[in-house]
Length: 153
Image 1 (cartoon, rainbow, N blue to C red):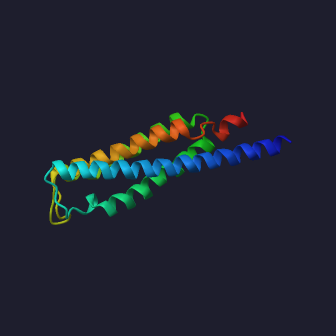
Image 2 (image 1 turned 90 degrees about the vertical axis):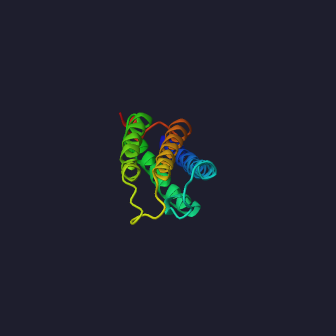
Image 3 (image 1 turned 90 degrees about the horizontal axis):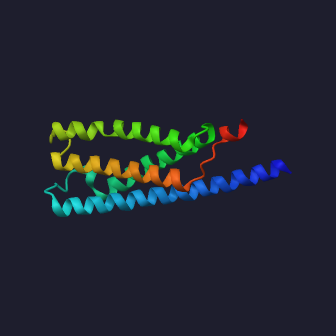
Protein backbone atom coordinates (compact mmCIF):
# COMPACT_ATOMS: atom_id res chain seq x y z
CA UNK A 1 0.00 0.00 0.00
CA UNK A 2 2.82 2.37 0.88
CA UNK A 3 4.45 1.68 -2.51
CA UNK A 4 1.26 2.73 -4.30
CA UNK A 5 1.07 5.98 -2.33
CA UNK A 6 4.75 6.75 -3.05
CA UNK A 7 4.26 6.02 -6.76
CA UNK A 8 1.21 8.29 -6.92
CA UNK A 9 3.05 11.01 -5.03
CA UNK A 10 6.01 10.80 -7.44
CA UNK A 11 3.69 10.86 -10.45
CA UNK A 12 1.80 13.92 -9.21
CA UNK A 13 5.10 15.62 -8.34
CA UNK A 14 6.45 14.90 -11.83
CA UNK A 15 3.29 16.27 -13.43
CA UNK A 16 3.47 19.39 -11.29
CA UNK A 17 7.15 19.88 -12.13
CA UNK A 18 6.33 19.47 -15.83
CA UNK A 19 3.56 22.07 -15.63
CA UNK A 20 5.72 24.50 -13.66
CA UNK A 21 8.55 23.88 -16.13
CA UNK A 22 6.35 24.77 -19.09
CA UNK A 23 5.11 27.85 -17.23
CA UNK A 24 8.70 28.86 -16.45
CA UNK A 25 9.79 28.51 -20.07
CA UNK A 26 6.75 30.41 -21.36
CA UNK A 27 7.18 33.20 -18.81
CA UNK A 28 10.86 33.56 -19.71
CA UNK A 29 10.12 33.73 -23.45
CA UNK A 30 7.41 36.37 -22.94
CA UNK A 31 9.56 38.41 -20.56
CA UNK A 32 12.52 38.29 -22.94
CA UNK A 33 10.40 39.42 -25.88
CA UNK A 34 9.03 42.30 -23.79
CA UNK A 35 12.56 43.34 -22.77
CA UNK A 36 13.64 43.06 -26.42
CA UNK A 37 10.73 45.24 -27.58
CA UNK A 38 11.46 47.87 -24.94
CA UNK A 39 15.14 47.83 -25.85
CA UNK A 40 14.51 48.27 -29.56
CA UNK A 41 12.02 51.06 -28.85
CA UNK A 42 14.34 53.00 -26.57
CA UNK A 43 17.93 52.22 -27.62
CA UNK A 44 19.81 52.46 -30.91
CA UNK A 45 20.21 48.70 -31.43
CA UNK A 46 20.88 47.28 -34.87
CA UNK A 47 18.28 44.78 -36.10
CA UNK A 48 21.17 42.82 -37.67
CA UNK A 49 22.46 41.80 -34.23
CA UNK A 50 21.60 38.11 -34.39
CA UNK A 51 21.33 37.33 -30.65
CA UNK A 52 18.58 39.94 -30.24
CA UNK A 53 16.40 38.78 -33.11
CA UNK A 54 13.06 37.42 -31.89
CA UNK A 55 13.63 33.92 -33.25
CA UNK A 56 17.05 33.63 -31.64
CA UNK A 57 15.72 34.82 -28.32
CA UNK A 58 12.86 32.29 -28.40
CA UNK A 59 15.05 29.33 -29.35
CA UNK A 60 17.82 30.07 -26.86
CA UNK A 61 15.35 30.80 -24.07
CA UNK A 62 13.44 27.56 -24.61
CA UNK A 63 16.62 25.48 -24.77
CA UNK A 64 18.50 27.11 -21.88
CA UNK A 65 15.60 27.67 -19.47
CA UNK A 66 14.40 24.16 -20.36
CA UNK A 67 17.86 22.96 -19.33
CA UNK A 68 17.42 24.84 -16.07
CA UNK A 69 14.15 22.99 -15.48
CA UNK A 70 15.91 19.67 -16.07
CA UNK A 71 18.65 20.69 -13.64
CA UNK A 72 15.97 21.49 -11.05
CA UNK A 73 14.45 18.03 -11.60
CA UNK A 74 17.83 16.41 -10.98
CA UNK A 75 18.53 18.57 -7.96
CA UNK A 76 15.10 17.76 -6.58
CA UNK A 77 15.78 14.06 -6.96
CA UNK A 78 19.23 14.00 -5.38
CA UNK A 79 19.35 16.87 -2.89
CA UNK A 80 18.03 17.13 0.63
CA UNK A 81 17.47 20.87 0.12
CA UNK A 82 16.57 21.21 -3.55
CA UNK A 83 15.48 24.86 -3.53
CA UNK A 84 18.64 26.09 -1.83
CA UNK A 85 20.88 23.88 -3.94
CA UNK A 86 19.16 24.98 -7.15
CA UNK A 87 19.50 28.65 -6.28
CA UNK A 88 23.25 28.20 -5.81
CA UNK A 89 23.59 26.29 -9.09
CA UNK A 90 21.43 28.83 -10.96
CA UNK A 91 23.42 31.80 -9.65
CA UNK A 92 26.70 30.16 -10.67
CA UNK A 93 25.24 29.40 -14.11
CA UNK A 94 24.06 33.00 -14.37
CA UNK A 95 27.52 34.35 -13.58
CA UNK A 96 29.07 32.05 -16.18
CA UNK A 97 26.43 33.00 -18.77
CA UNK A 98 27.23 36.67 -18.30
CA UNK A 99 30.87 36.25 -19.37
CA UNK A 100 30.26 36.42 -23.17
CA UNK A 101 27.97 39.49 -23.04
CA UNK A 102 30.40 41.25 -20.69
CA UNK A 103 33.21 40.51 -23.14
CA UNK A 104 31.06 41.91 -25.97
CA UNK A 105 30.30 44.97 -23.86
CA UNK A 106 33.97 45.82 -23.41
CA UNK A 107 35.09 44.69 -26.86
CA UNK A 108 32.25 44.99 -29.39
CA UNK A 109 33.83 43.39 -32.48
CA UNK A 110 31.46 43.93 -35.39
CA UNK A 111 33.56 41.73 -37.68
CA UNK A 112 32.58 38.62 -35.72
CA UNK A 113 29.08 39.69 -34.73
CA UNK A 114 27.49 42.35 -36.95
CA UNK A 115 25.48 45.00 -35.15
CA UNK A 116 27.00 44.46 -31.72
CA UNK A 117 27.23 47.54 -29.52
CA UNK A 118 27.68 48.01 -25.78
CA UNK A 119 23.91 48.68 -25.55
CA UNK A 120 23.10 45.40 -27.33
CA UNK A 121 25.49 43.50 -25.06
CA UNK A 122 23.83 45.14 -22.04
CA UNK A 123 20.43 43.92 -23.21
CA UNK A 124 21.82 40.39 -23.50
CA UNK A 125 22.94 40.64 -19.87
CA UNK A 126 19.48 41.83 -18.85
CA UNK A 127 17.90 38.88 -20.69
CA UNK A 128 20.16 36.42 -18.84
CA UNK A 129 19.28 37.98 -15.48
CA UNK A 130 15.55 37.97 -16.28
CA UNK A 131 15.71 34.28 -17.23
CA UNK A 132 17.58 33.36 -14.07
CA UNK A 133 15.17 35.26 -11.83
CA UNK A 134 12.12 33.71 -13.48
CA UNK A 135 13.57 30.21 -13.25
CA UNK A 136 14.67 30.59 -9.64
CA UNK A 137 11.42 32.11 -8.42
CA UNK A 138 8.98 29.89 -10.30
CA UNK A 139 10.80 26.60 -9.84
CA UNK A 140 11.66 27.03 -6.17
CA UNK A 141 8.23 28.43 -5.24
CA UNK A 142 5.82 26.45 -7.42
CA UNK A 143 7.51 23.15 -8.21
CA UNK A 144 7.59 20.31 -5.72
CA UNK A 145 10.34 20.96 -3.19
CA UNK A 146 10.76 17.73 -1.29
CA UNK A 147 13.77 15.94 -2.69
CA UNK A 148 14.12 12.18 -2.89
CA UNK A 149 17.15 12.30 -0.66
CA UNK A 150 15.03 13.87 2.08
CA UNK A 151 12.61 10.95 2.08
CA UNK A 152 15.36 8.32 2.26
CA UNK A 153 16.85 9.45 5.55
